[in-house]
Image (cartoon, rainbow, N blue to C red; front, top):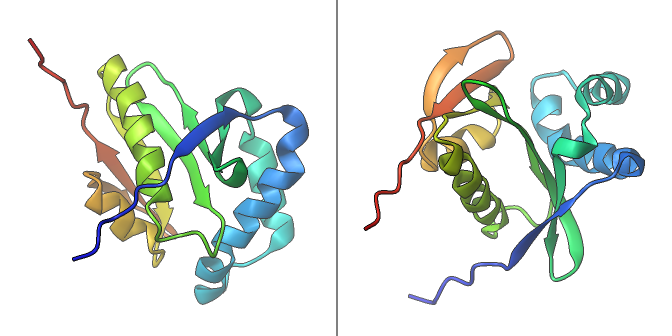
Length: 156
């Protein structure tokens, strides 16, 4: 069996001026899933993303100096929200998302709080999140929500 090469992923703080670049990436990453359920609408995608965009909570996913995605992690009082995790089409399935989650998990587990995420019904993201320890929380008309309990590292 060949060795699996884990990409060297660096999370880089986003700026307010990155909005258009992030929106374009989000639309590219979501397009196929939204088209499958007849809900692709670039204008609605822009409005939805603009209504929740927070550069302070957003980080670019950089691999070898190339921006291949982004992640939005929002702290809360009783849980964290993984609001967005997108990897550019053509770079998905290469371990980049898993490497991002590993970094996110370290951050969230240090706070000792659960992590919530939502995924569009029918999206491959559902299997991805379940594979990484998220448990079904609730289902709505278009989305499925998951929760990952905090992992407490007990090292002596």
